[in-house]
Image (cartoon, rainbow, N blue to C red; front, side):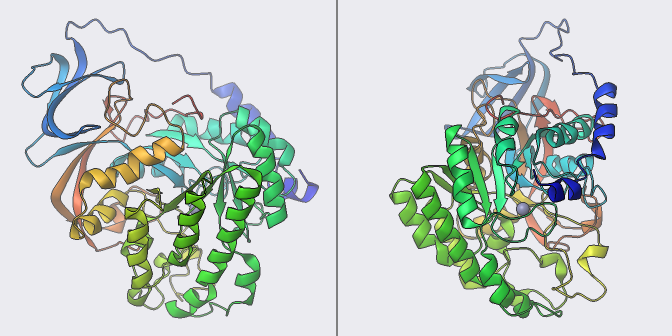
Amino acid sequence: MSEELAKVNQLESFRDELDRLRAAQQEPADTVQNQPHTADYDLVVRGRRIMTTAGLAERELGISGGKIVAIEPLGSNLDGAETIVLAEDETLIPGLVDGHVHVNEPGRTEWEGFATATKAAAAGGITTILDMPLNSIPSTVTDPALEFKQLVARPQAFVDVGFWGGAVPGNLDDLRELHDSGVFGFKCFLLHSGVDEFPPLNADQLETYLERLRGFDALMIVHAEDSRAIDRAPSPEGDGYAKFLASRPRGAENLAIAEVLERTRWTGARTHILHLSSSDALPMLRSAKTDGLNLTVETCPHYLTLAAESIPPGATAFKCCPPIREASNREALWEGLLDGTIDYIASDHSPSTLDLKDLGNGDFAVAWGGIASVQLGISVVWTEARRRGIELAQVVDWMASRPADRLRLRDKGRLALGYDADMAVFAADDAFVVDAGRLHHRNPLTPYDQRALSGVVRRTFLRGSEVDYQTPGGRLIRRGLA
Ligand SMILES: [Zn+2]
């Protein structure tokens, strides 16, 4: 690690705090409880619409020790210490898996913290999040930084939380240790990340890092925008969205994605394109997948549901990078999702303080780029999907099963025997109007404010226990062990 990078990450100053947290937190004892009870299961859920791997069916689930241990036809009268009967309008879906959340704690907790982010996730039916390695200080680019973040997160997690490591110039030799500590893979940027303590790799460095990661089969996830193309694009200055859009052209994304694809091809590494926005890149992604590259792609609710043409002047709640593009681009992204070129959907929840969104002036050049939406993802996507005649099971596949598969979460993302009893009660035909001030995330801003959405998450269960928003029941998870 370079001296400069160590300095901006405050690698010396956080060590005292790390030691204090280590001393204060003992490893939690294994919390499987042996309460004497006579029922066959800790919890039984009955309903006409239970979304198992065999599709929607009338079922009863038996849950014990936090796991799904029985799936029987409705009417089997499974005997639970507690029983939940779904209402006629409710569907039981697997807890969603969000592979892309920026929590920002420690260091920028005023932007977002573990308690608020994980409560928001739970309220949106998400039971597992993976935290991004940047925007916190220190960023997660060394093993002690990971441990520090874990110690901060553990007592306040309302859902299960896993961590990404960061790949930045100077930390090539830190990757293996982070991997052995259970990170789910490594994130890199190909242009300035927005924060100085998390510098980008250039394409040749990317290749070197991919070669290293291939040695231990780790996944590289990439923010793919090309800095040379962005540098040459017009300035985003002012409150007009069109100008901002022109400053982050599709070409910048296309160029960076092409680079990632070729370096993936040359090294044989496993890569993942984060937050795909430019639909121009779909044909080359399709062709790379046909060639057998070990590559996956995500997109986000905002690219699938919003459009540049209707973003009001100065509405910086909509600013993110890469940007929300035209309606025609959005249509092409849906095609890419439906044909499997895009593998899954993640929120890219990336809030900041209201101050940094420059709400007074609404200057897109000044405002922080990031959209806050983790609590709303399933409703946002479902509202649009049902309009297009897409089934809820397909949406759940994009937001639970498929990310769980790519992230090698063996116990998550499905209602199936032996899986964690992570579940949400979803009322698909119910509706609500978003009130940003009533969402759980820390700063009351979202581009979906005042939008009417279909699909209400009524209850969320983590390993068989209902999330009560009082007692943090989430665990910190490691790659391959959850
Ligand atoms: Zn992000």
